[in-house]
Image 1 (cartoon, rainbow, N blue to C red):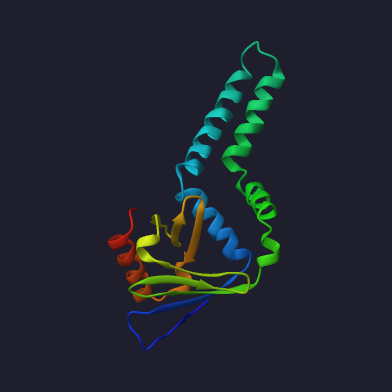
Image 2: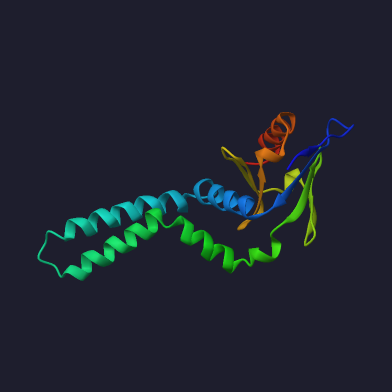
Length: 170
């Protein structure tokens, strides 16, 4: 969870453990900041809940309003359940406690861990988003990396932000 110092000021290396805390943070940051889907889901969930409550006072059958209330609650406050479903679907239990190393310099971003490794040019990243807790990077549609800020020194955060601003659309 700490950054490794390098002699080369243009090279930044970050080590962190991909444990349940990391995966939860990555999921929530991706859900809220990675696409409009997360924010839209919460808005629609709230509207569905309000509509269900409003239907209680109409002559419609009681189960119609109950269904809307349950769907609305799940969409608006069911993120812990959605995380568990996402966790099972992606088989994350196997990847817990894996240490991953991200190395980035003027030309490339690379990652290395027990189960995967790769290297990509900055110009090869399609999209990026800085969140309050880290960086979401997309090398292609529907595939993303999450680099938490707690694993980076302030110079590395600035370097990463500047590289993304200079090479990739936001």
